[in-house]
Image (tube, rainbow, N blue to C red):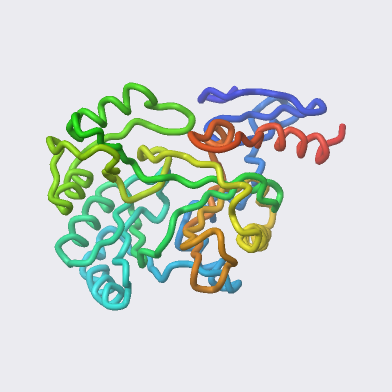
Length: 312
């Protein structure tokens, strides 16, 4: 039996185990078997390797390179070269990170880069350095090479009312909608406080009514972003490109493709979108329960796919 908690269900007599986006297939002896994605998962866990494959097939990915946590001097040299041409700054993040943890974007000076590199290296062996690209991050939920749902996230934010401070607004928003399928609790730490300082604000500032105060630079659900369904609004050209990309990874059944798009309403070009990563255990809940937009039954689609794949 598995050590972690799984939702167990059977399709035509075959047991399946689901937890936090991971879908495993049961063995005939009753034990938990391999991931439905087979052996491709370990490759996708390494963002730089995934990007290398995508780049080799002609797909757009940010310019970047991964460094060992002990290679600070080499990383600084690479940052200096990359920052000279990266119009929106440089991003530093774990090469195998999850859920937007330890992601630092828009870095432009060496002291900020060193600090970010140190923070990531403290927890991860390999650190990915890449250009920050323009646009919003769209998550394409792909099943057997087809994109069946799309969402994006608005970075953590609060809306001013002319009465409450930013600290109060965060507390109010967390109280009313924290840790739901469509959003997680906003947590204000040093990076968020630095964002406010850059704008001449502090947690005690009282924003004017209707003013949006951004408290994050990433659109990840787990970093307090608001999730919005975009399945019917993204230009079809991006869907076609994403489907072509995921089909380059044999055996990949479930996948969340994260793509930065400058303007999702216009057709894709080589320069207006970039693949960030392919996630082999994409979350379901935010598609079923977006904060804004229609619900997408990705779980039902998976069960239907398994029934057709394993007719019994």
